[in-house]
Image 1 (cartoon, rainbow, N blue to C red):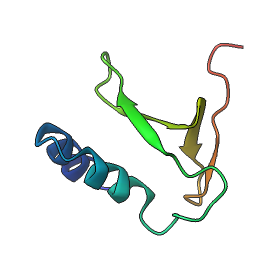
Image 2 (cartoon, rainbow, N blue to C red):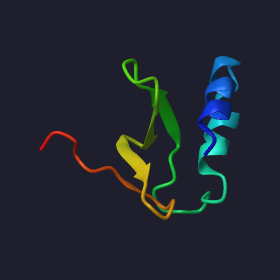
Image 3 (cartoon, rainbow, N blue to C red):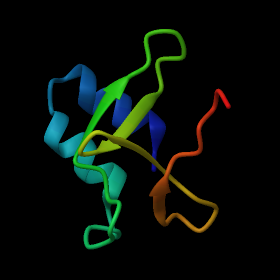
Image 4 (spheres, rainbow, N blue to C red):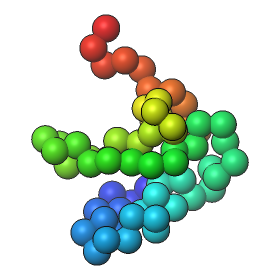
Length: 70
């Protein structure tokens, strides 16, 4: 995913297009995100499937996120 293009789409208010860019090619996977939010500190997107946080693995397949605070 092109982070600069994603950010520019968000700034322009095109959130559906930004989400589409993030899931491009992985639309039919089990944990494909349905929404996202922007982290206020890092300004990076956080993706969710329902109320579960998801992230792409090394191969680009969407998986449930590991708990960062064990």
